Amino acid sequence: MTTRPAAGPKTGPTAGPSAGTAAPRRLSHVDALRGFALWGILLVNITFMASAYRGTGVDDPAFGSALDTAVRFVTEVFFEAKFYLLFSFLFGYSFTLQLASADRAGAAFLPRFLRRCAGLFVLGLCHAVLLFPGDILTTYAVLGLVLLAVHRIRPRTAVRAAVVLFAVTAVGYLLLAWTLAATGGGGIDAAAVTEQGRQATEALRGDAASVIGAHLRQLPDVVFMLAFFQAPAAFAAFLLGLAAGKRGVLTDLARHTPFLRRLQWAGFTVGIAGGLVWAHASHGYSGTAYQLVAVAVDVVTAPLLAAAYAATVLRTLAGPRGRRLAAALAPAGRMTLTNYLTQSLVLAFVFTGFGAALVGRVSPALVTLTALALFAVQLVFSRWWLARHPYGPVEWALRAVTLAQRPRWYREAP
Image (cartoon, rainbow, N blue to C red; front, side, top):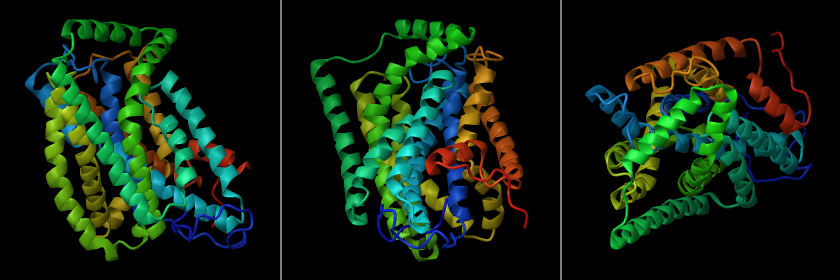
C-alpha cells in the first residue's frame, strides 16, 4: 500500500519511474480509517452470525426484552448498511494507490489487478461457503473488474456517476413500493418465517456438513440482496473513492477541513434520520411498501452517515489525540483482510456447530460485547504481528498472487 495516487492511469510496463524509485511512506490516518471501518463491519456481521433470524423480518423469539430490542435498534440505526460503504470507498481509493505502485515499479497494472481480483474472489467464495454467507469479497472482486473498465473516468464525472447511481437505485425501490401498494400486496407470513428461522438455527448447530448446507441454502437470498442492494451502492462508493484518490484528498486533510466539517453536519443530521426510518421499518413492516420506501431512504442517507463517520475519524486523527488513535487503529487497518476473515473464523467456532454452537443462545447485548472484545484482541495482535512482519498473513498471500512473486515474510532488521 502506498500513499500517493497515480498522476494518470498508466497500465503499460514502461509507464512511470523506474523500479528503484522509493515508495512514499504510508498514511497512518488512511490505515486507521480502514481499521475503524473494520470495527463497524464486525458489529453488524456478528449479529447475523449469532442469530438465524437476522434479516428475515422476524426478531429472534428467544430475545424479546426491551434491552434486546434497543440493542438491535441501535445497531440498525448507526451501523447496519453504513460501514460497508466506508470500506467500499477505501477500496476505490486503494485502486489509485495500486496504480501508483505499478507505475513506480514499471510493471503492467492490468495483470496485477486481474490476479488480485481472482484471489479476492476465491477467498470470498471459500469464506461464504465455510464461514459466513454474507461475504463481501466476491462482490468486490466482480465490481473491481467494472471499476477497471471505467478507471480512466475524470474525478468530477466519477462523483456525478456515483450520485446518479445512488439516486437511480433509490428511485427503483420507490417504484417497487408504489407497485406493491397499488396491488395491495406485501407483508410476510410471520409463522412460516419463524419456523424457517428455527430450522436454520438447528442446522447451524449441527455438524460441519449441516453448517455448510445451511450456508449454501442462504446463498441465493444473499446473492439477491447483494445484486440489488449492496452492489450498486458499493460501486457508487468505489467511484467516490476513485475520485478522492485521483484528487489526493486524503493526503492533505488540512486543506479539506471545512468540507469535512460540512460532511459531519449534513451526514449526522440526514444520515441518522434515515437510519431511524430504516430501523423502524425493519420491525413489523417486512415485505411491505413502507419497508421498500425505507430501503430507498437508506440508499441515499446511509452514504451521508458513512461520510460523517469518516470525517469525524479523520478530524480526530488530525487533532491532539490523533497520534494515539492512529497507533491503535492503523495496524488493524493494515491487516483488514486477515482480520476480516479471522473474525468470521472465530465467530463460526463460537456460534456454529464447528465449535460451541451458540447461535440463538446469546443475547444481543452480549453479542455486541463479544464483538468489542474480539476487536480489542485484534488491535493488540495486529500491532504485535506488524512489529515482526511487513504484511498480515492473508495480505502476504494475496500480495504473492497479485505480484506473482514471493514477498518478504519477516521485517528487515533496521
